[in-house]
Length: 343
Image 1 (cartoon, one colour):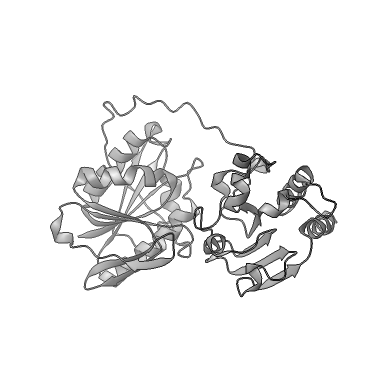
Image 2: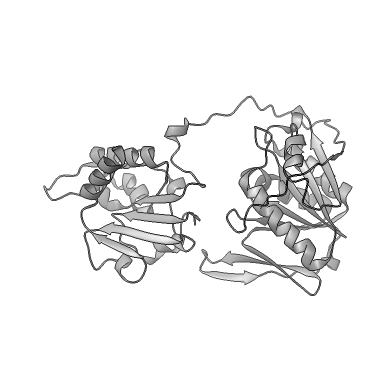
């Protein structure tokens, strides 16, 4: 049975970076297992996406396209993905763990009588079967998943977490075979548009080179005995605007509002980095006013270079968790950094 690489297009018709990373994993798995690789694309117009990966040595290209399949909608996405899997006669499906596919692929697996394992971080092969790796227990343990594929009739769907493989670069000519998906009853939900912040107001940037993490120290009383939350917010946003870096926070900072303390109003639970938050994969990370305790640092395991600014020379970052620790006042440091960036 074949291996199907499944992806959707962005609004501009191209494939997202996570999708190109998943293609690298699919190519490797197809080579390791000696099985044919097929491509399934979903979107309003998939021709640009097909041309961008036309040289991937796939045996066949399939597509579901049209205006109804442009926006993210569970009913149409699940039906389209099921149709692509059936057309490709897929035994294994590799897809990126994007928000759109993460929502519809579990339903796709159920419709086809298959199984799904999500957010895998590595993909090997053993005994003629995939051997995916994923994290467990708040990403403190990793384990490999094995399934008896003879025990279910549908495909084994695997979604690859972003940042786990190099993006594929294989442009070429491709002419996808259109797969028909009847729309009867699938468009009762109407997508009227997308609301999103301006580019400068967006502070979560997964593809940024640098992650800036703010700790609870930003909202505490400073040397003069007063809290300077407004100034802290201005310093952080000024840095983000000049560097286009991504912003994270510790859980304590996000939760201070429930304790009646002033907070940085642009931080949400989506910014949390650590055991109760996200595990980003930026090349560099800078922690400011964070103590570097284990629940928070666990989210930094995939950051390649770690630096921290903290007044406490004995904080967790100094215990082998940071490559460089600056024992200094984060307010003074960020003021100087922003001044240098302004030049």
